[in-house]
Image (cartoon, rainbow over all chains, first blue to last red; front, top):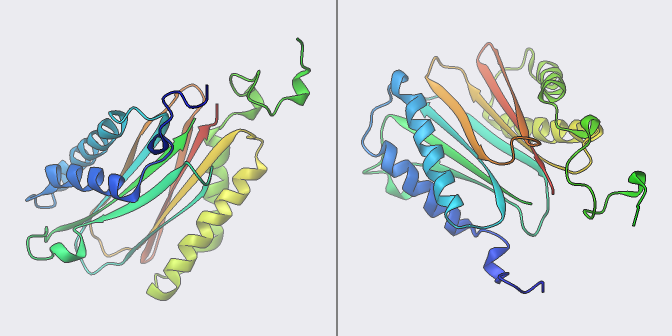
Length: 122
Length: 126
């Protein structure tokens, strides 16, 4: 009975899978934009919604929490960290920085974005 | 078959958290506020220490949350620490969860050349 509909990839997400979802969402919203105070909250909203929708479409039995940070590019330093108390094998926490290091040339020159995705099994 | 309530950690009969075992954002926010003021007052942003500081704050908040009575909750703490150079910044989150039991608490702290944002999520394990 435990086998019914429980393929192994049903149990967790891979880093790559989440990376694709995060990058796709950010690129769609921020690709050639300049940092604008008035638009930022709308961009964040849209990024988070796109990611949650693509996570939900996988139909896995998880709750999702997506955090997005957008910061104007100055010389300021920024650090993020996460601590979690959840189930080791199935729950995931991943952080993604955009623009990625290797895409420096076409990368957005006015802002950084950090997206964190948590998946908790229920 | 009647199982006395106090035996229950098994998922068999508990459908939702009791009122005194829920994730209450106000209680968590108070804890986070205390930790931030304690750890960050008078501290100035330095690359070398920021990393361990952020991790320390995350772990401390997580440990203190465990002492609140939330037995079946998964706790996730996120800390952002940055240098305050009058840049623009925005942090926001969206979640897909059960709004009856799951919740979050967030807190920010700013002083001198440093800012910090902490978000704590609580997700009930059904």
